[in-house]
Image 1 (cartoon, rainbow, N blue to C red):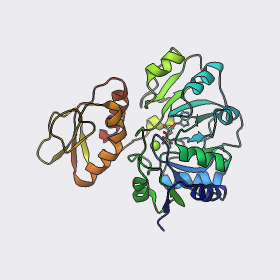
Image 2: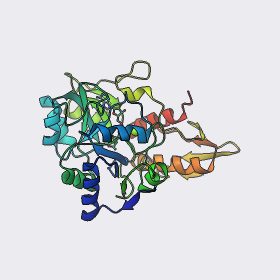
Image 3: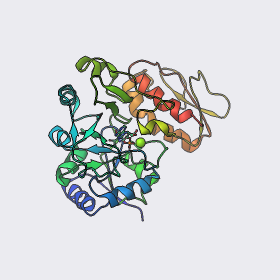
Image 4: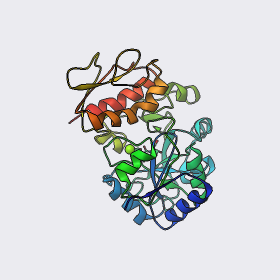
Length: 311
Ligand code: TXA
Ligand code: MG
């Protein structure tokens, strides 16, 4: 059965919280991408969540909390990590720290690790749901494992509508790519996933940010997996489209769809996944214009390189 799609008004939030209490799965909007939420403490619900996504059980989930205080009760934050959290929460920055309480976020959600990824999202509907639920919610992106993350309720409905109990429609996501993830356990933070909180913004508050691992030397289980896979073949750094190709443009010029005609990286990031999906529906081959490898461009290129990788 196809899940209902509801605007996140108070009645829908109450219904969503009660479904989650019963072990259900609820798709919720966040400022980054749509998440598939489950009660972090309920191992049965979390098992259903992994199954619904087809996600390997070695890849841990992010626990979302209503406030920094709630997150600090779950994980060991150094003084510097707290200062960084205060600067960016609520918002698209996820901290990997040592877990304190090992039952509120169950072992399955942590993939058996002693560490825990924590985030306080900024989207008003996610915040309202976390408040109403009254505990941490684990929420991976609401897409089948390995596919393009959803940035609208319609994306969730078409990808996962028969696997979730309710979809909250909070409109298109403002950021458009998943949160920046750092390992905050050491003297210096380590970048595990690029996002819209940029390295230089982290550096200003906690200097010494180190580059994270790679597929060869993974520091986060997620780095091992194929990601953002469209059905179409992607050709990157393309100056124009060859016959049969769609062109995903950036900056002025002809394009099938343009991430940002004015060359604005914020706009391009917000459009990235939705436009990849649109072209994927109509074309087998997509050429992608070069995106400058600076600022947010690096986070966009990270997604594009993984989407183009057919290995
Ligand atoms: O923006 C986001 O973060 C979205 C929204 C819904 O909040 N969520 C999201 O979740 O992107 P997911 O499950 O698709 O990505 C979580 C990433 C994975 O790459 C995972 O490997 C990593 O965080 N991760 C989770 N726990 C970790 C841990 N203890 N150590 C290292 N990496 C961890
Ligand atoms: Mg994901």
